[in-house]
Image (cartoon, rainbow, N blue to C red; front, top):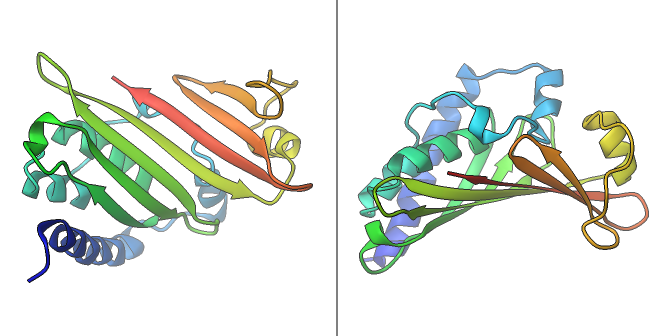
Length: 192
């Protein structure tokens, strides 16, 4: 019999595959909308209340109850209109009192895969804080990504030397040159 974390991982994979197959027929998007999904621009804090998802269901089965609303909100935001795979980091003791974290591969339509990580921590007085990051390689210079995909005018300041920082609502985008003609786009947002 597989261990509890392995069994939970297998359950999530099976449920996610079924959800992706169902969502693929229900969530068709145009090429333009798909390309806009490659680099999410609207901060999570501005998104509408999401419906239930399989990541939230797996968290509940693992005993993570205090953060279900926040897990559902962030997971739906990250996986909207995209195929994905997820790995759960479930606390081994009293999972409802500790940080719950996920790592995802997200495959938006007509775009390359991106990596996402989201972590959730219960706070005193109820509720839950979250932080998520997405990481995507784009075969273009960071200046072209800013001008053509993000429609940024001017040059934002560097984090230190080479990594540029852009503010998008409550989120931040970090653009890191990769080789001579590539850009790694990292989006980070803390959700309270």
